[in-house]
Image (cartoon, rainbow, N blue to C red; front, side):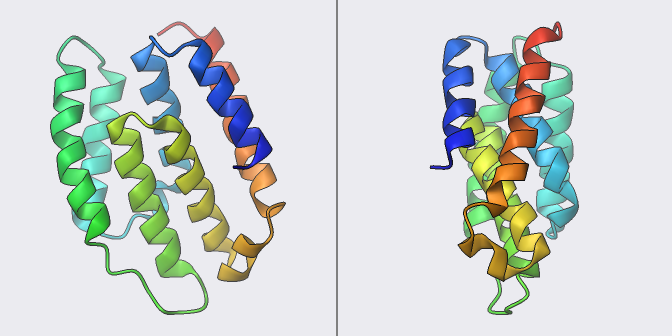
Length: 151
């Protein structure tokens, strides 16, 4: 795991009882790669996820759980691509990032979102661990900002 992603995980563990923070952070990660979502059903699921997180209440966790079941199927059925430019891989990674975000697994959502960003540059970049440094640093900064903002 990338060292900055480990730091993100550590920060989230400090607030593990704050589900809203975890989902807000996951949403921030997905918003960075939402343009990589290709499947209409994934785009619609992103909109639902965003609405639920932005209007967090007592029913949100249950609604997210139902959406997570759908997102797992959507992510697993994404056709992917054999192209070398990485474009379709960026879409697959963005879809998996969304699925993990909806599940509440903010660390994996961040990891997949970073992959989606890097694949967007080109498939070659994923072989260089330093390629992820900027994406994860930006994610950590967003998490730290969210921690100081009231819900």
